[in-house]
Image 1 (cartoon, rainbow, N blue to C red):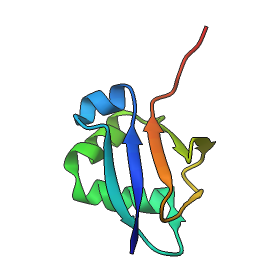
Image 2 (tube, rainbow, N blue to C red; image 1 turned 45 degrees about the horizontal axis):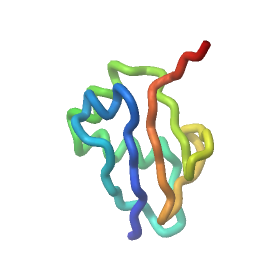
Image 3 (cartoon, rainbow, N blue to C red; image 1 turned 90 degrees about the horizontal axis):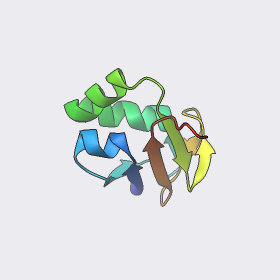
Length: 86
């Protein structure tokens, strides 16, 4: 197994009390949903965060992605709340 770097931004970072972590990912990669499910099962704070913040966005290597996209070893995965602009 290899790893990915996971970054949390804005209110997600504040609620979790951390801005980054590293997680193991299969050599062939796996979906963001699959990786996140495993992380949520191990971390009650992360699980609670995703339960109370239903529209979290994801990026892989600084490009907007979906939860069905594949994350591979060495990738940077980022989670952030929906943004508003004006």
